[in-house]
Image (tube, rainbow, N blue to C red; front, top):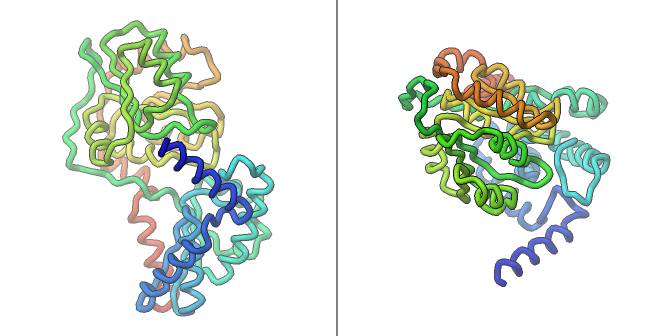
Length: 337
């Protein structure tokens, strides 16, 4: 009952904030802005990273109070043209995004957006006053960990573990297709572990039917890393939003293991990264699950050797934190620091 009440109160609060979305709480935003302004008094650069919008608001306010600051608006997620409340249509989300950006980016020194949103910004935002400040990088989420001693994976009769880590928000991604594919594979030596969402009804029903499927709720990130490190294959499920690249892709690639991916749209944002990564199997959710099962069996039976560190760094430099640090240093230098 307490949980239901908490959910109801939260939903009422979200409905009340619908008029000011993406700003949810003005009082909270003011507290954040005060804290950032105080912390920026002796700073050279202030970075407002979306999400949440409160961070960009706070960086904007800090710049107004201290014009000598270099203000970088950093859109890790797509704001204009991104995902919003289901009560707002795409046109309204875009309209609000543009309105907020005109207010917040007037005094920005640079606006950094992700490569996945380049097409949208070039088509819809070219006439915006801040467009000339726009620079494209890529999601800086690839941390290459050289401490893992990874052995080549060789197809055999031993139990092979496939791990999916992450949530399964309705309308964005679903495990249904992969579970259908799995039903066409009689191999009992497979173990498929879904970590992060134990409330998904499709997973719950599948677990009851298929003993190879295990479901675990949210766990600490350290435990997620342990599970990924112990897996033979990593699984990612298709994202239905073309401008919302799942961060798990980069964490997966850091382990240099074979990746199994499903996709339901041609513009699925993970696909370009997975194609460059190389050791990945892409399964189209719009196809026949039985045919996809045959592809998966072949992939599981193949020999896989971990990609080298040097190759990973070369191919995905723009996805490392160092690439963004380079940009910050460049902008700081341009502003006399």
